[in-house]
Length: 266
Image (cartoon, rainbow, N blue to C red; front, top):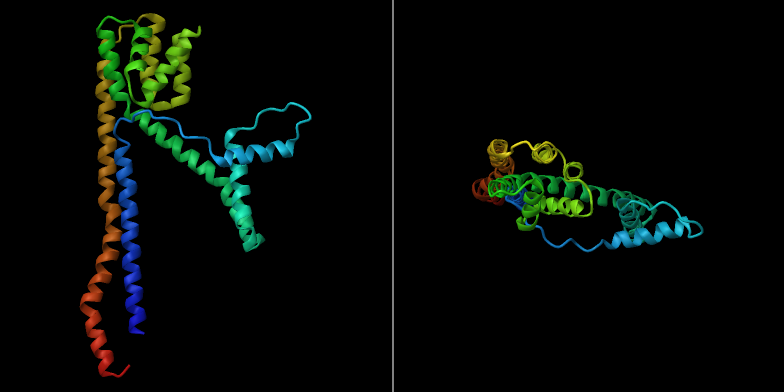
């Protein structure tokens, strides 16, 4: 009996340590995202997407042209089919639950990826604003400054500005390309894109406005970093308590209980 209790306490200590490591890893990743990101190669298409595309094609048939199926839907179909097929030997109930989980897994991953992308875009704002200030201060107009930042920047927002500059070379007006960029990237970049669009449309001087915007976005990034850092002690409190109390019980009460049970002939 006492050995089972000690084993249970040791198991709880191990589980608490794993939970604490996972929490620290998650928040450490959150702090890492506050750094300006570097654009890297895009990951290869998921195998789930290929499986889902085949299944959707078989279900719809090839008799007549149809509207394309969204990529997220094909990934969900493929993941649901693969998960259900893997657990099919374990019974229809588990297979159905696995298919249900597989349907939502790609959507959850896509949601988390889009959230991380928005955070990376917001964290890249200060560097992009500084580069634009330097480019405009060197005598470039707004289209040339956007093109220069797109070529010289390394973050995700600089990559989006490179796409906007490429759109202007294909004949689209820069202000409209910046509006499309805002729709793709969300609210954090709207002040900067609105400022650049106003400068391109109406010739508004941007020097002082960019200086104020640089101060605001750096202050926002600092507040976000402080918020993440303040949450770390609170998240560490429960794992630390769960780890310390079982260890204290093992070191103090364990030998006493063993001696007592030995004298009682248990």
